[in-house]
Length: 270
Image 1 (cartoon, helix red, strand yellow):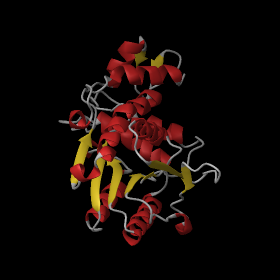
Image 2: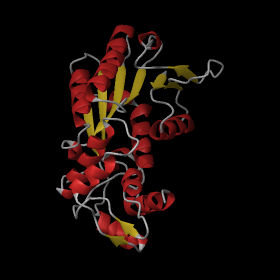
Image 3: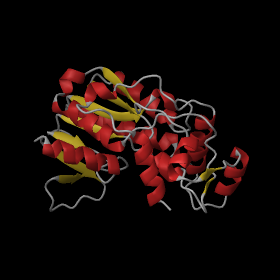
């Protein structure tokens, strides 16, 4: 049996749908599971009593990254320790692409990768790039102008559905992918200036200083402004363009063009 954590998220929903379509025996782990739904079970990384994996062969662990580094590390450590204790054969972990090493949320991902490699479990690491849908949402124009401070750097974001398809490929035959870390950035690169042209709007990026000041009054968790600012600054510095991707090795179709996906996300977020 496969257990997928973070079952209420957008990526996990797509992975679950793909796995079911492929006929895989999968259960969805979520903090809000309904006990009457046998396809779901309660899994809360903050509650050790819910980390029971004795009937699980493969644990698909989606990062519990919506928190500070120390909290995420504690959660991931608890899940991996439970997997070791309960005899899980294989853990598949959704990490962060190598282009993300300068992002403020990379530390917990790299720690988790090392923890898995030292765990004695069979493992596969899916180093996912930033979602094209996220970049589009962050670059939504206001009054016909995109002001998000992405600079002129090109990025290689990836379609969330391509990441889900890649994950299902691994889940179909985990042993064939044991000990592999796949870089899963997008296959094409573009800048927010390109996105503005596609939208027919003006790109007039604010400075990082102006963006930082605008976040001070926003209704955000304490860890969120540094995360957002690191995306902007990494893009502006040119660190988010990938030199290669393993995406084509894991999906049967050609990777989806990501500029149109970001364009639709930007339009939807208006």
